[in-house]
Every structure is written in C-alpha cells, then in structure tokens.
Length: 101
Image 1 (tube, rainbow, N blue to C red):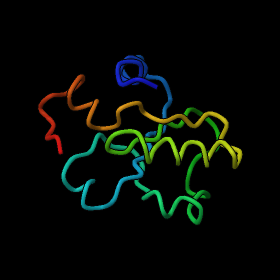
Image 2 (image 1 turned 45 degrees about the horizontal axis):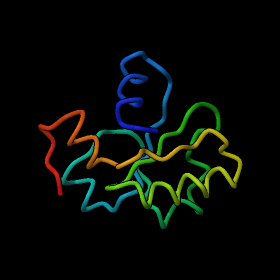
Image 3 (image 1 turned 45 degrees about the vertical axis):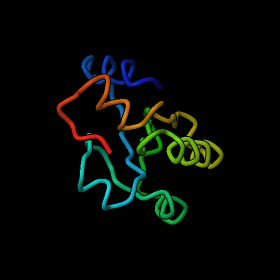
Image 4 (image 1 turned 120 degrees about the horizontal axis):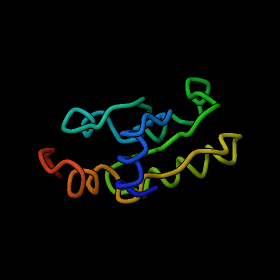
C-alpha cells in the first residue's frame, strides 16, 4: 500500500491496524502510531495481532515490513500489506515535520 493510499483510508476512517516492525531505538526516534512488534518477535507474538480487518505493516523503508507482511499472510493474516517506502516515505510525502533517518 502506498503512503498516499494509507493516508486517504485513515482520513476516511477505515479500520486499519498499523503494525510497526522496526526496532525500539527507531520507534523512539519517530513513529506514526499503531502496534509495535519488532520483526524478529512476530512469530512468537502473532497472537497479539487482530486477525480481522486490514493490517498495514511498516518499517523504515519497506523491506522488513514486506517480509513481515508475507510471513503474516502465510500464517493466515490474508489482509496484511506492507507500506511501500515505509515511514521514510510517510515523512517525505505525507508529514514532512517528522524526522527522517
């Protein structure tokens, strides 16, 4: 999902679960909200993620989030998608007041 599509859907009030799979140090620096489960903890913490509704996974640039979304889809989370470009694209396109790293 692109950042512009995510922004449009959030503004429309769509029920979307944001899932941040970055590391704690990254999250402390900048975030756009949602659940926080680092990529390496996803297999052991899948039970914390809602199974119904749209899940948009994000990381810094989209690489880790694509791996996480693929893993989640394989494990029954059919609506899991990765945020293209990650939080870096969000900061560049949607909210340039956010720090970039």
